[in-house]
Image (cartoon, rainbow, N blue to C red; front, side, top):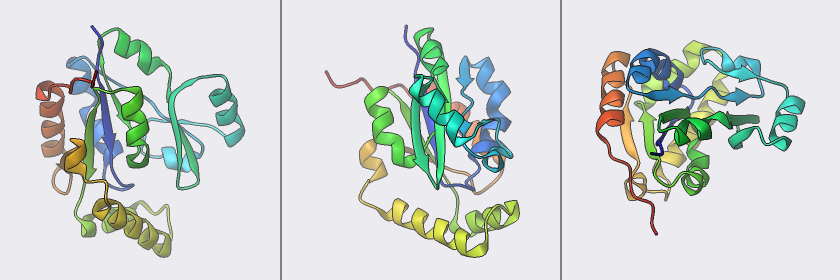
Length: 192
């Protein structure tokens, strides 16, 4: 029996890494593996259990077929290791930290994936981005503007069966809701 990909996405600062870290042990008990991303900048891996590599090393891995999925965003390259395909083939659910911009490509590769959009109130997002200190205020404003366009864009999350998960409150409440989704949301049947 094939497993299912749980595709968690959301803007930088929405708390994806914190949510994954807080839920990791409980996800494991549910038979859900968590994939470790490969990222081309070490600073991006702060707070995330990720593998940091140079652009050259990333390109070598990409050309060698080491990634099940890969994309670029915010001047960085991201890759999901090929091992996720083995886990899925073995029947595990696999949670990845994905990209909103890569969702349609991911759906083509994994038609039954469970798409979850992690959201936070704009003021909470601004506060989190300022607190982590990775970017200057003007860069944060640019991120928030891009996020506003993405949220208001023509994608129509409901039309794409994307489940919205608010992470403006306590992380434990969000963990409980995520675990509930992993347990109860049945995968969509791919179109034949």
